[in-house]
Image (cartoon, rainbow, N blue to C red; front, top):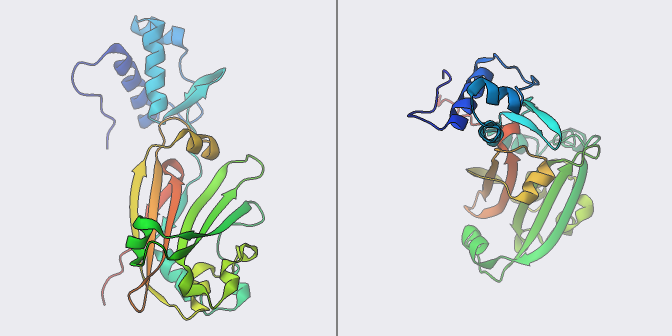
Amino acid sequence: MEPQKTPARSPIAVRIADDLRIQIESGQLQPGDALPTLHQLAEQWSCSITSARTAIDLLKKQGLITGGRGKAPSVRIPPRQVVRTSKRHQEEKDIVLEPEDVRSRRGLAQDTLELTADYQTVPAGEKLAEAFGIDPADELLQRIYEHSDPRTERLEAWSISWIPMKLIESNPAIADPANAAWPGGTLHQLYTVGIEVIEVIDDVTAAMPSTVDVERWQLPDGVPMIWCRRTSIDTEGRVVEVTDAQYPADRTVLNFHTPRNT
């Protein structure tokens, strides 16, 4: 889509922001390029410093520029993006029967990221009980996984999952946090207790981040968070796992693959 100006007669700050945004979207201003100073903008547009500052703030809220805390504003350099594809569900299932050395090759790079895992047994409560079709008092294994970059302390991946305890009680190793980096992941864990997942449903929503999210993910202004709830269903039609995962929208590509019927 070609860059477009904001419709109707707009305040001067919006017109300044529009002009700079179009320069960024058309490539006249490249990632890393410095923006004009507030005084330069005020002189160019015959406006106040306040209007120029408001224009810069609008661009920050759109996630187009960075700056502040003593740094001059510049065009934001796009971060590296991670592709989250629906193909991974089948790929994860395909390796369930593979040997451990093959299963251990999947997942995030353990040599560069720090894994923190928190395991607890919790009552299902009303909402999760409805999702699983169980009693609210039934116990769930709750697992929270965090992967962070030890160099920057930036959060790189986060998820929380629940599995009914009655489904996995025959293999206590699944509930042991010492086994967090399990080769083959949850699908292989479930396989060890005789459960085969045949359907996965992803529900994707988005919301603006909290102040905690902004700090932990080191988000610039204007970047929303993507929430994905994954529901795993087995051969008996039971919901066997529910997972909520969180992704910054500026670093994530969601790829949905629909195979052709043959």
